[in-house]
Image 1 (tube, one colour):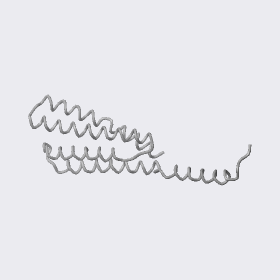
Image 2 (cartoon, helix red, strand yellow):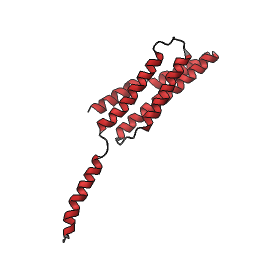
Image 3 (tube, one colour):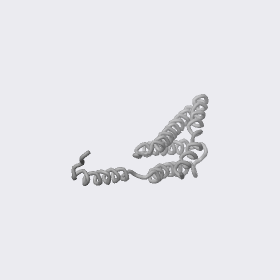
Image 4 (cartoon, one colour):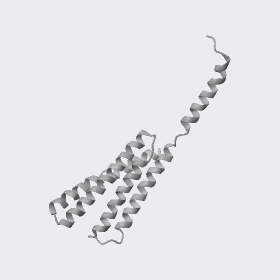
Length: 145
């Protein structure tokens, strides 16, 4: 088989460009750091609203719900290439949104003094936060590999 001389020059250039393009994406570690930063900010903000607030302060709970909603939006906006990290991202977004909604529902029921709705919202809140420990453990394990 006959290869023209130009292929001897084009082949290395094509390979080099392919490698350069492939390496331009962020590393898994950099993507993990982005997700971790948002998660840490969310926890800090929720804690700051809860700290110093009275036990039955609906305003503080609503501020915490807002913080979770903002965190879900920030988390969703992160561009990821890693499929496993996208899975964790989806888990965090769902958890933050569900937690935010359940908190809002609980506060609404509390204000109306609707015991049944408050119990339902409380159960939804517990359900929304249940996967947190496992999600964080799996995420940390994956990112530390």
